[in-house]
Image (cartoon, rainbow, N blue to C red):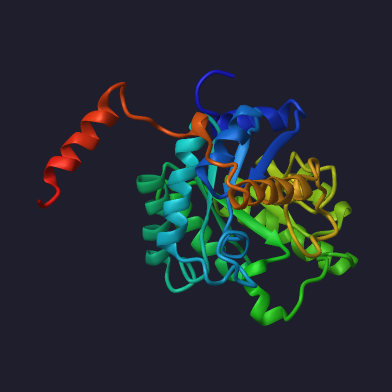
Length: 286
């Protein structure tokens, strides 16, 4: 695929039943590696508040922080389809704020789409942002920004009634103008039916194998995450132990005086050390 991946490319992938590969990451270096791996989509998630800043929820992520890291990811992966996460209170206060903040991601950070955690209360917001020329990915199912309301998270749409309600919400989001859906932590059977019933790309985050694409966060893929990752996460690299070992080896070399050595140090040009000593000697008081 030549040039930057577009939403048209993702729609084609859905039509051709070619799985869309998405990764959530937060920095230039990781994004550049993801780009080399020929991933289709990067989501710069507000989970950066947890994985980068060390908070216990996504809520402390601010617009300025999200714009800055989205721009960094864009520089690292200029050919990958880029989605930016609208953080807590960036679209909740008014439709005007939602449009203004969504526009910042496109104008300042190079994003191609913004993601909004959406309940039925935000159908109008999704429509207004989309009508303003800002493509929207509606995030439904488990919604991390509602942790204060929920108290703890559990799988969504595990009953028939809840499944019907989520399918209806998905259809309302697409009808309002959402150009893609992200379904998190939802029963696979319900996510499958949403995917079959909609023409927009549907990305699964722990919602089964039948969606058009899958997304995991980079630290989980690499096996770097501490603690207990969610049930749907899987590591494909198990790099935590080797990473710690590399830092330990560095520390041991420094403490033993083995790093830096001559090979990893800069040196004066030939003859310049003697000239330096001479200049220093002349400048010393008599």
